[in-house]
Amino acid sequence: MARAGGITHAVNVGIAVQADWENREFISHISLNVRKLFDFLVQFEATTKSKLATLNEKLDTLERRLELLEVQVSTATANPALFNV
Image (cartoon, rainbow, N blue to C red):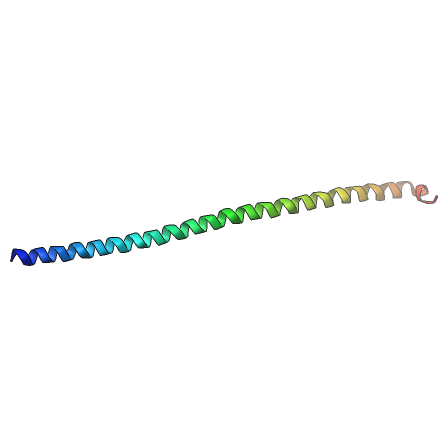
């Protein structure tokens, strides 16, 4: 009879070991996917910051051009004789 209990215990241990390996594999997959997601987000952030910086430079250039045009228009409207030469 002692032998039958030993077999049952061995089977239970085997099942527990198998379940442990399955849990570890699941956790490994989850960890890998979290790392991939993190890497994607870091790359996305860097790309987005770069594109926003480029856009900001273009907007700054356009703002400077607009300010220049505004000065030219205000000068022209204030002194129309300058353009009658």
